[in-house]
Length: 141
Image (cartoon, rainbow, N blue to C red; front, side):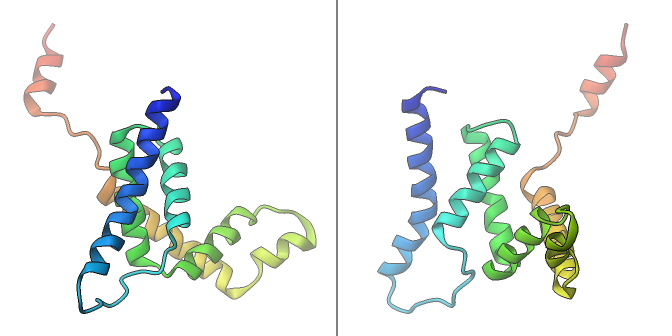
């Protein structure tokens, strides 16, 4: 992917994230806040998600935006942020690692993040289903 394509993809991502905000400003009654994820956190999540799923392309963009929306609807940003830190620092050795492994909220938040990520995988990254006629065609010599 060349620089121009990367820039276009990033601008598309920014547009997808900013569009609901712009649309909400035009309405008179302010709806209740659905989630509190900052735009930067959403973009970081989507870019990391895209890298984890094979790189930056429109297909991954679609699925990863779905994933961050699902995640943001299921968890408060502060809980997500703490769960992410607990998860990333869990394997740190010694006393410094105990700060991330031992608190009671560590296990609870890590488990909650794992559950929500499983939900996002299920709803936003559907497995490719093989049509029955494709299976029978593959079995013929």
